[in-house]
Amino acid sequence: MPHQPLDDLFADDSAQPTALPLGTQAVLLRGFALAQADALVQGVQQVAAQAPWRHMLTPGGQAMSVAMTGCGPLSWVSDRRGYRYAERDPVSGRPWPAMPAAFMRLAQDAARQAGFAPFLPDACLINRYAPGARMSLHQDRDERDLAAPIVSVSLGLPAVFLWGGATRSERALRVPLRHGDVLVWGGVDRLRFHGVLPVAPGEHPATGQCRINLTLRKAL
Ligand code: MD3
Ligand code: FE
Image 1 (cartoon, helix red, strand yellow):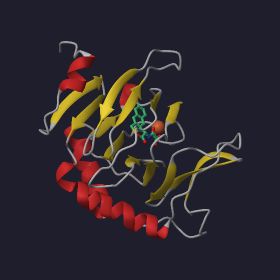
Image 2 (spheres, helix red, strand yellow):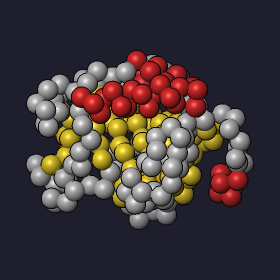
Image 3 (spheres, helix red, strand yellow):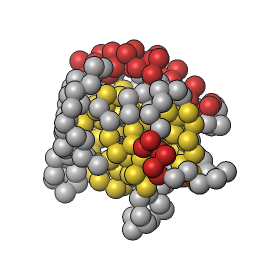
């Protein structure tokens, strides 16, 4: 497989679904969620009506710039006690909202496309980026089952995704993510460092003035 120059990642403006390998077991499925995007945004609004957006605190006590909610049997929480998956929303004390069927279907279709079937996620984290919000380089390692992949769906405003290596110091590739793009990664790429640069101001017909990201995971 020839190396894909970074310029090509930015230049490819086609709305046609395309699979771009980012690693041995990581693939960007361009436009994979486009046909379901409106249903996914609706699902996000239904979830947020039951489990409101909140800015979680890092263990250091700083509020994250990204607003979060979640759905499914488990979702991720962060506070001064640390990071963990929990069965209840600490804001309401109630279980997290059920995972909309459209989320599960999309996650399973994408995982199959990427060679990770079967995939039965039990958690969906939902991130909302207002202009200026970002996510610094980190690893996702709070899931018990690191053999399962993660599927992420980008909706609304575009963003630049940082695709790093196995160590924080490794130089990260910058990958533009647009409305309807889906990333799937697992296996040897599961613990890569990754992040999101500050989102630029703008307006998107599907989401308004924000970017929304779903990550479907198997936490237990
Ligand atoms: C590659 N979210 O919620 S999703 C997160 O766009 C998170 O909101 C980002 O990182 C966002 O934890 C990026 C794409 C992603 C997520 C996790 C990965 C790619 C990844 C873990 C390993 C390698
Ligand atoms: Fe992450």
